[in-house]
Amino acid sequence: HKEKIKGAEALIRWNYKIKEFMPPYRFIPFFEKDDSIDKIDDIVLKKVCAALARWKQEGRELYPISVNHSRTRMYNKNIVDYLTEIFDSYHVDHSLIDFELTESVSYNDMDQLIFVLDSLRQRGFKISMDDFGTGYSSLSLLTQMPLDTLKIDKSFVNKVGSDSDTDKDITVLRHIISLAKELKFVCLAEGAEYKPQVDKLRSLGCEVIHGYYYSKPIPIKEYEEKYL
Image (cartoon, rainbow, N blue to C red; front, side):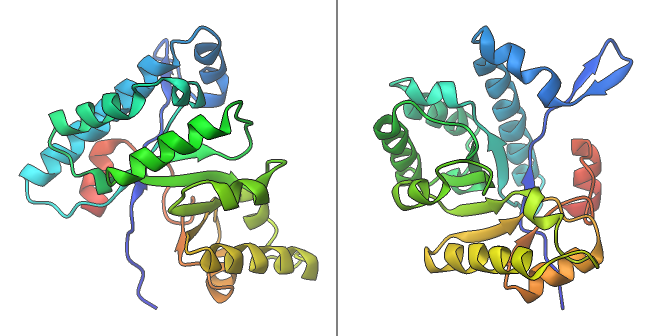
């Protein structure tokens, strides 16, 4: 079975006082509280755009990059034009950007959210639902939201490919994968760490898999050297 790289995800770490790399769950909530999260989103977006523009110039093969997007920005009326201007200033093809939404958070204004997602997709951007299966309204969201990819949460992946996996765990996973396919979404499993997990996910029909089995988070330079 030949495996092929399908894309990457832009992650952020804080090199705190040059002593440790702090994971996002330790600092993002503070930036969300004081509304400066938009600045972090913009820094990540611009770094991704600059990298894609440079790789294009160097003639490298380009793969889509997923970027997390703060839910608070979805209520900004001009967000679609604003984001489009950023990408167009770098001459980045919209299809190379995949906006990730976390399924486990609630949204106050679903109509506005769906309007923004529809508008982004009309302009050629991709939309993913992250952490699928951890929220309280997963299925109702699926029928409403314009999505390209469903990312199955790591908590489901952890339960397969070992001696302790149960028929129930496998059944739930199989149905999530077939549901994604029937709804015409790409199905991506997150957090695969071992070969038995990858083999099991593949046997259940999951097309795209990511996790430490393939790579831990790496700096952009290392990504270039290994995968482009």
